[in-house]
Image 1 (cartoon, rainbow, N blue to C red):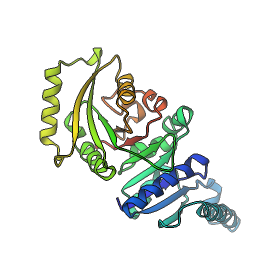
Image 2: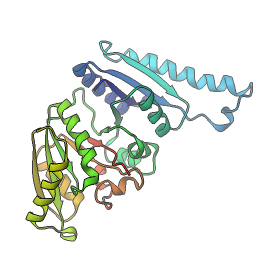
Image 3: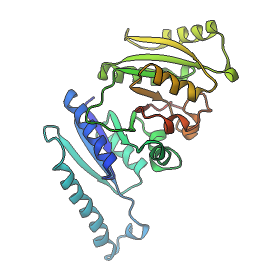
Length: 275
């Protein structure tokens, strides 16, 4: 964990997320990159003499907001401000590649904010397309304490790489990991079938003997099963897995709705499932 990216629109929630990222960076001697993406009107994207001063106005205004922001943050951590004149998803991926980003932080405003974040928005596209893990914080605090993570999926081979990435982050946080299969009436498997699937999954996974436990949780739907498991087991972080093609409704076995993110106040870590 050497380079952390935080997206900001200078709202209260995004600034709170920045404080969380800075606290994490202090623990790991990491740099923090703060990105504000400006989508300039098309008329300003030309090279006419009229458009250049207008474009510079937006850029200078953003620079001033960054200067004001730096007065509020911990100066013991190296914080680099970035401005990109591109849609947020493209800007994030450009910065991720250019500065070798390890983790992206994004803020959200609870249920309403989660809907805005995940349904048809630029941020949803960031989660789907980002080539590195994205941490969505619903209720930012000064310190992010992650000691108990939940990794829920159907334990098919396509989740092996995301699982290995999740374990690396668990090691960074010093957290234990619960592997959870939510068993529903509509996709029911026997206990022996699930145990066999998990066993075969773990044989192929590179988990370096990290501490984790496997669990089967029975519920009506996968979404409610995850939410109930999180509540009953004091989970600090939920891992979810966008496939890059079908959006929020396909984080798990191709049929998860946005209810999970909208109704959980627990931070959510998204790790892209490769095609």
